[in-house]
Image 1 (cartoon, rainbow, N blue to C red):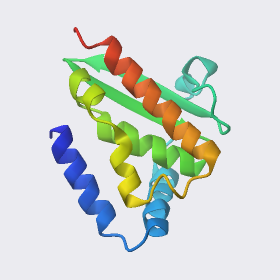
Image 2 (cartoon, rainbow, N blue to C red; image 1 turned 60 degrees about the vertical axis):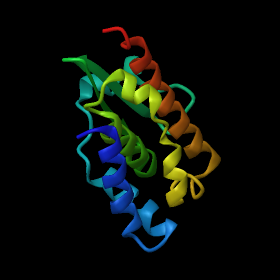
Image 3 (cartoon, rainbow, N blue to C red; image 1 turned 90 degrees about the vertical axis):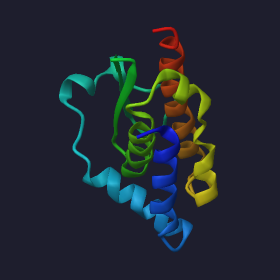
Image 4 (cartoon, one colour; image 1 turned 45 degrees about the vertical axis):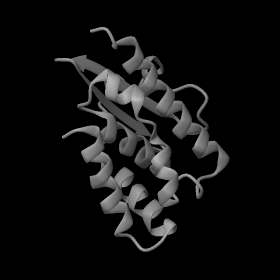
Length: 138
């Protein structure tokens, strides 16, 4: 699935929810339902610095595509991290670098986050974009 198709699919899913609070609640439910990262990845080596809640991020590159996984102690942050990881996983570095997660604002996801959680969203996006940028020529 292309990143444009993923964006349309996610937009349709989020649009089906009545309010911004319902959409954020959906993200939180996704975070609570997702299994945790393996203990080997819940270490300082994979920790995202600058986030109030502990967040761990794993990036891999194979076959010209990026794969991302994340976990957090906070269900809200974990849900947002997973949303970003799922959205960008399986895409080429070029597609990732060229596609901002700014469209989430249209669904009220970012507006209902505390400043600390918005910061976490930004930090995770920086990690995704940085990893993709480092693999542009591969």
